[in-house]
Length: 244
Image (cartoon, rainbow, N blue to C red):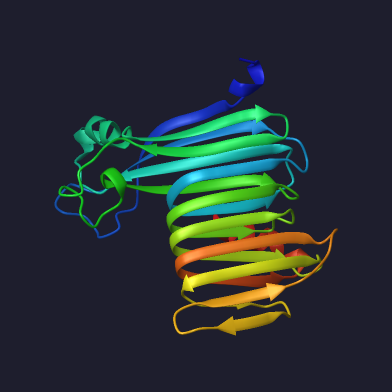
């Protein structure tokens, strides 16, 4: 194996108190386990994200680097002395960060076996996930998200994103040209750019044809909505700050 395959740099692995989703009970609260990884990345390269779930946000920045921060939050409440127990539960979710070459990174999520009798309606393995990804502006994204929200801001490369359930939201610089193909089986598709809409009984589609060198955007959602917003170039930095 080459050294590039393990070229990711661990910046931090911290146990932090996450903001409680439903308040506190006594002295117990939700505990988030946070880790951040970085790797150098070539302009125009491809970033693949597989089997993610929960909240995934991707924003562009002016660095030749990909940075991934993952927050794992077990859905039980813990006291201040129970951080080790929370970390053990969070370890059932493995998020890998694989730098395959100078221009290809793969991020994948694997969940240890868990019982749906124990967590019938909650997140996988009883752990909520949040991904915060920063990528070079012209990166190509290939996202296969299972359930939850996908948000992409300021990226002007080709984007392919699909989800089983949840929502996909893109904020694209209005100065660029795009070819867009977006479909939701059970949900609504909305786009700021001129194009053709088709609305059925349960789902909807949107199509904007454009030949290369236009950026190609392909979006698919099973149950949920798709929204594509345009943004002036100068506004991208402010939007990125809001997504942090």
